[in-house]
Length: 253
Image 1 (tube, one colour):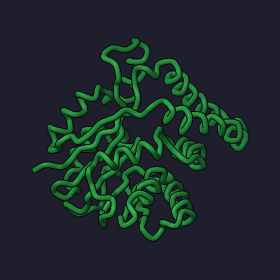
Image 2 (tube, rainbow, N blue to C red; image 1 turned 90 degrees about the vertical axis):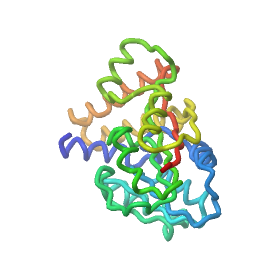
Image 3 (cartoon, helix red, strand yellow; image 1 turned 120 degrees about the vertical axis):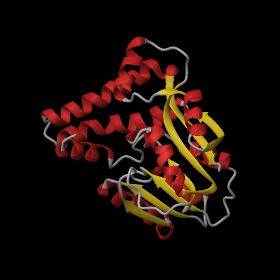
């Protein structure tokens, strides 16, 4: 991806509350499934935090936690800092600009690793394998991951995601990956359609006109919108076949 293309994506997504499908209620459900004591002084890392939708929900739900919010895009972290200050939790959220594949953490540093809609950037298997050492023994990983929700799907849908994200697979396949790399699954659920449409896609679509105007309807900006519209149309047509699965798994030794 060229820098210009990346800058366009940042400009499109930074104003939005979410950079991917999700919801505060689903973050709370996933946290409940961890079995961790929300009143404890937990150490947490939110990896691929974007502008902080999940980070801020976790800060609200875990009043004694210290949260390291990791993203490689400085503009997203700047927006997170603003949102954290407005929510009164900035003293418990530390922004960290870093690549998720080169995290500067110590072994067994965290009680909880969190990653909503981001681990695909690294690949699910590589992510869960390499991040495991940052968890304390018995620590918990929560990650949402593109998942087939039916055993078969239309060929055009299969072809699209096989190209866009070859690791797309069923929940059973993802559970096997977790078990193979030293985790015991604690819970799993599928994000409902509202997390895609209402929380992510519709606000994004509402921003397209201003985005194109800011960039003079350039060829590059128009192409960015067209790619997003294709993805949205694909979901609107085939939502029964895929979603994000939310995986909750404990490090076992």
